[in-house]
Image 1 (cartoon, rainbow, N blue to C red):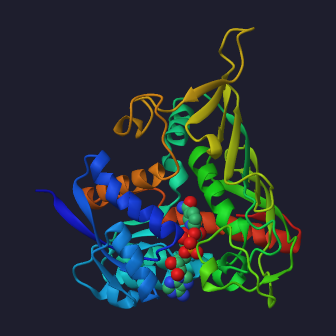
Image 2: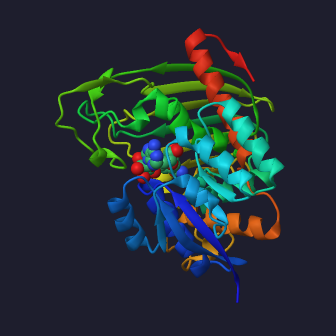
Amino acid sequence: MKKHLNVGIVGYKFMGRAHSNAWKKAPLFFDIPAIPVLKAACGRHQESLTEFAENWGWEETETDWRKLIARPDIDIIDIALPQDLHYDIAIAAARAGKHIFCEKPLSMNSRQAEEMLKVCEENKVTHYLNHNYRRTPAVAYAKKMIEAGKIGRIFHWRCAYQQDWIVDPSFPLTWQLKKETAQAGPQWDLNSHAVDLAHFLVGDMATVSCLTTNFIKERPLADEASVGNLSAQSSGTEMGEVTVEDAALMMVTFKNGAIGSFEATRFASGRKNRLSFEIYGSKGSLTFDLERMNELQYFSREDENGDQGFRTILATEAVHPYANHWWPAGHIIGYEHAFVHSVVDFVKAIEGNTSIKPDFSDGLKIIKVLEAGIQSSETKQQVSL
Ligand SMILES: NC(=O)c1ccc[n+]([C@@H]2O[C@H](COP(=O)([O-])OP(=O)(O)OC[C@H]3O[C@@H](n4cnc5c(N)ncnc54)[C@H](O)[C@@H]3O)[C@@H](O)[C@H]2O)c1
């Protein structure tokens, strides 16, 4: 019989659901060296926590994360909470010898990220930062194509992460819109994913210039019902100040000579979760759009003159990473699958005593870029990394 790894999850809304699904599905579709057990779910409100636990099959509940971490039967702590809570929980979990599966962005600042990395390394626990988009078959295949030299020398990275869930001024002042819980707006939330992809596909950055703006200064206060609800509306009249930016534009130089741009916003009406990137190189180009996540657009300068043009690669064939564990070619997969792939690789890393990327060292590198962006927007100067 395979070994079991007991998971304790903290947080049970959007990411709590996405992670629960992944822990369950991973051993059903992939042959992994240990079986994750949904052991205990943790949250502050017993009633809704119990409902969540029963729905997803978590065996037990805890209302104090310190108690969860103190339990000797827990092997993995899954942090599915806002980023202001990642630091304390990750540090305590690492000191208790638990492996950590942590949501992005890693932390509120680079000082916290450095400490989180150090404590994980000292305690030799496996640490994973959930930039799940790396693990879509199309993006993972894009990486293979770049490594195989099909794009050649990269000149341009052009990335936009666009959403529209706060265009309505009656959308309440949730934790994502307050500096004390989120640190920043799309610069932290969305550009963390985008910067991770840029590090993964293009390389490390040298300089950052950034512009941020805020379109709506005040919003109605949020109530408990709006937690985890990205289409919440508030009928309340009491207002609070929005203390993060609403949009961020970054321009960067990469150490390898490429240049790049990042646009991150929650004000792009009609764009629901559009993470798109374009890579232009000396031999060819690649483009990706998360809203069509099974596809990759590829242009090769080596195609015959006259036949050249972007072609669509449907990344569902056995040769595409992860794809052969799901359905026959052409039978597409969705948003939740990349979380399953993350769990698969995380469990393999724990059992194989290897690291998994991205980890907290990558998270630290990302936070340094995001911080440089905020610094640049405040000083109106380019910042060197
Ligand atoms: N990987 C991704 O693509 C992705 C997508 C969305 C969110 N995230 C990240 O996941 C994390 C959680 O985001 P979410 O969308 O699930 O948020 P959410 O608002 O849906 O859920 C947050 C959870 O944290 C709990 N919580 C809030 N404050 C708490 C406190 N003080 N003590 C205990 N519990 C508390 C809430 O009750 C809820 O269960 C964030 O860091 C976010 O950036 C990642």
